[in-house]
Structures are given as structure tokens and as C-alpha cells.
Length: 133
Image (cartoon, rainbow, N blue to C red; front, side):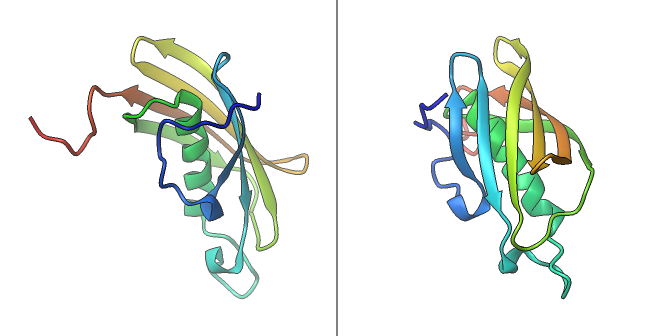
């Protein structure tokens, strides 16, 4: 599970989630999020859930790994808080692949504690979503 070559989201900043493993054959990936002070929303060091969601979404996109993959829906649960200094590992598995449609399950864990779980509905387009005509 070591082929880290990406075909999508090439400008995604590693400070918001770094791809650490990818298995193209079995459509799985692993992303690491190191929670930093800039992600905090209060003096206690609570991390905004958007950073957690963003790293999980990136994990799903890296799993599909097609140039024009987009997120079309998600269903997720935030199960425990993340704070400054935490390292969350997101692991994906493909639960549905039907032509251009994928459902990717992503689980985020802080050590053995599940902090996030979600299903990401992804679709592979013929061209960039912002290209017209």
C-alpha cells in the first residue's frame, strides 16, 4: 500500500492532510492530519470540524484517485473532539464502485479512539467540474 502517486487534488496542502498510504488495486488510502494551533477555535485547543472533514474528504478523493473526481454527497458523524497536537489517521475503504460512481467509507482514529466516520459519494467526470461546454 505504498504507491503515493496522486492523479487528483494535486494542490491539496499537506498541512491539512497528508497521504501516507494508498492501495490503488484495492481502492484504499490512509491520510494523516496533524492538528495545529491555526486550526483551533478556542483557548482549549478544540479543532474546527471542517479540518477533520476536509482530511477525510481528501482521503476519499485519494482513494478514487481520478483527475476529475468530485464529492456529490456525504454522511458523517463526529464521534470525539480533536485538539491541538492530536494526530488523526484516516483510513478508507471502497464500499461501492459502479462505473463512475463510488461510495468510500472513511474512519478517522486518534490512537484507538474513533473520532470520525463518514461515507463519501464520489463521481468521476469527463472533464474538470469548472470547465464549460
